[in-house]
Image (cartoon, rainbow, N blue to C red; front, side, top):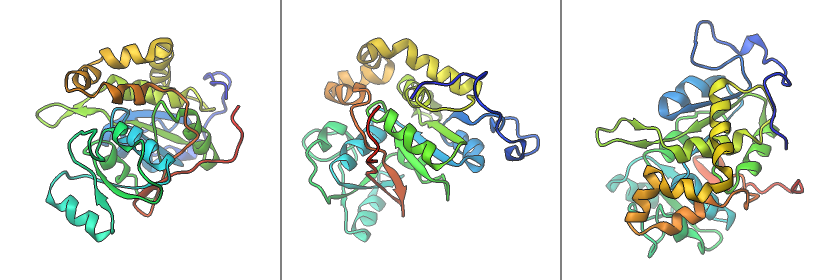
Length: 264
């Protein structure tokens, strides 16, 4: 699917704009922002939301749901997560990153059996996924960028792509390069008039596309993973468009959505 340019795309109807809300990017079909504030600004006036949390949540969900697992996103990594899992007859993943047990490490989920029900706590990707309300919600990463873009455009024209980001020690949002480039990987596969923010994310991905693993391993989040012994997660995350899976949130759970449309 070729990327669009601002000059080629049609104007989004003015009726979708909400007064003087300067930050909702309502004059554009393809929109992009950061974190919870981005969800609050963009999603209410969108037809579909895409949450991008590359180094953990989104990649883990793609890996697991591609194998037929069901993933229940959950915000808190505390004792309430265990109780939530029990209420769903699901298993709670290890809330730390581990390759020895099912966890937030995408590599740990590579062999998860079909039909497994897992609660996946995440203060970024999971939290944002649960804030989108009634708006259809997908989660995307480099692995399934094209598949997610294609599914999103089946759902509507106004698409909000949300880069999750990470957190500083004080809890504030830390914009994370991997999520911005991951958003851009999806955006470049979307047809429609892009906001400047969306164009910026697409440009970041285009710049790094030829050496994606290098940039992911050398950015702050990648260096943290490497120093903690999780280089394998970088390999999982940097594989671009190898998955035809488009995980969608239904009834508070992500399940795989693998369209029968042939790859192009």
